[in-house]
Length: 360
Image (cartoon, helix red, strand yellow):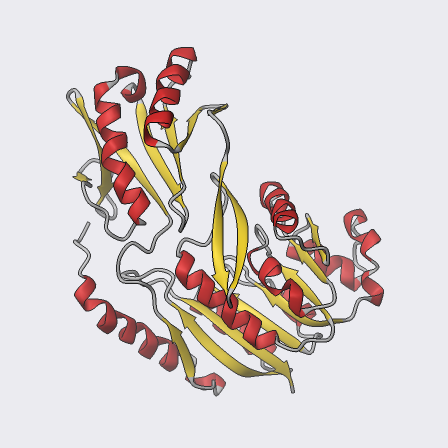
């Protein structure tokens, strides 16, 4: 792994900006708004292999394409300060205890802006009461949450989540973020992303439809801009977290439904009705805006055509290539009003974009 050169961050960000502007020039985009990351300590989660060398273990990463030439990680400055603080303490405890180190092969860290940390220790062996006792003592000493995982086994010492608090336009929003579930990795950039989306839809007097809502990241932040919100997500764990987030934030006008984007599209077209959607009275909903935050594969053709029926579209993309493909369809009916780049992943080639389209 190459050392992080934070003094080059501004130049690297400028290169990404130029690439996006050149890539999307054929779509007659408006001026690109760029939201930078903090150069250091921006990442709220991290994952490391555990490499065993004699009687000693260490956090390890590998050069691309290799699995047998580990690089010892003693400092990881792109991770949150709370992760950086707990990493050496965790590894010291592991090296002092055969119970903790025996056949340990992976460590996952999940943190929040407030400093809450959840550590998952993943093993190639079954865990027992002795492991629980030692891990519980470590948990109390460090003031963190710990989960033990093995094949067909998960041991919770207290809880499986952390609570993130985001400041969005001066309002504090709380999010339950569950271990092994997707969460936005860069919390400060996520705050910018949510604020940008709110500005796009400001003054709405209709309902919002959201596809790929995850744990309600956008739904919670945008709820007060709409009369009613229907948000869909295929992950059962994420839907449970979204409903908990709804309660934590005192929101009553959002409905979370566990269906895929493809299933929702088939229901709306009448091709295949879904029982989970029948109670929502979708035929009479006043969806003036649809928000999509699809995976890297982008939207399927039918979903892309379905959302093009709505007056306004907020499209959050983690893959410029599939965004281009989808925009070729959407720009037949819509015009791009706003275009943004969010640097969720500094020092990598990954780029997050936001596009706001309105009906021609």
